[in-house]
Length: 115
Image 1 (tube, one colour):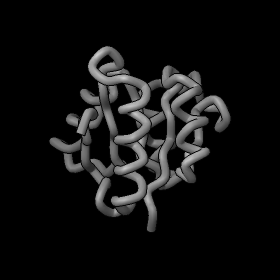
Image 2: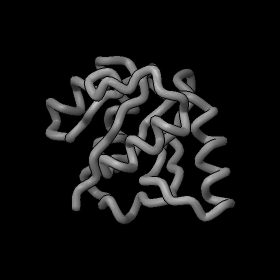
Image 3: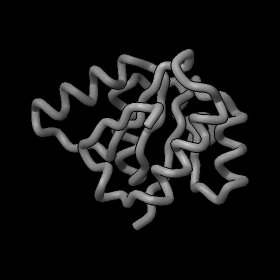
Image 4: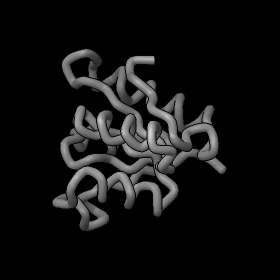
């Protein structure tokens, strides 16, 4: 199954729009009505939907690490610091991940950008 993305609330809309123009299946927390959920619940929601969560929020990295240590499943997390990577590079890397990867490749995994 191809990899689909779930965008955290702080991700610039330009990233979402460009990924969609490139044929990537993206859903934002705002569109899903979950923008105000606490981080663990937002990661649960992404997992329910079978989508990897993309975020700039380091708290998600801590939550994913906690889940890995406790053998708690989650769909996957893609994390970067916004000042470490340009929007263009972010889009390119996310496109590569979604088109080359599969859902099962991301389960219980954290991927850091840039690749």
